[in-house]
Amino acid sequence: MAAKHWIILAIAFACTVASVSAISCYECNSSLNPGCSDSSQISQSYKDCSTLPGRDRCMKSRGPGSIVIRACASSNGRNAVDGCTTNANNIETCICSSNYCNGSSGSSVVSFLTIIVSALLCFFF
Image 1 (tube, rainbow, N blue to C red):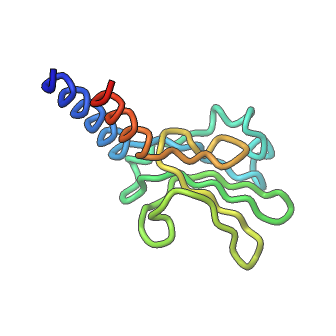
Image 2: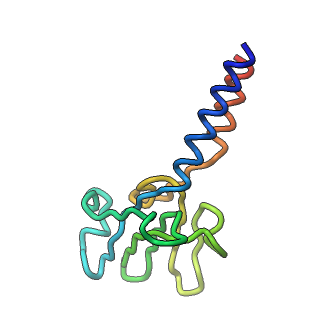
């Protein structure tokens, strides 16, 4: 019975590692493509971030005048943690780490906590 739990945990971990190493994000700029502002119109604008060295997260920025930029981002510095921040120029930037997570109209943050909770549930139920 314990072996079953370890196998489930190993599979969950392997899925997490795979999703971290190769991520795809929506990529567009509403000043060049007005459809970028509308999350229902961006399905054709995507980028495989593995083609860009060091880019392992997705980013969505919304600035004054409703300008929206969606792109691949690196995980160094201020982008190391998933979530949203607003700078002094009133530009909100959201960083996330799952495929196409920068497509929603709100913050789309996926947490490693989900996998941990799933693994714990396997052990106790």
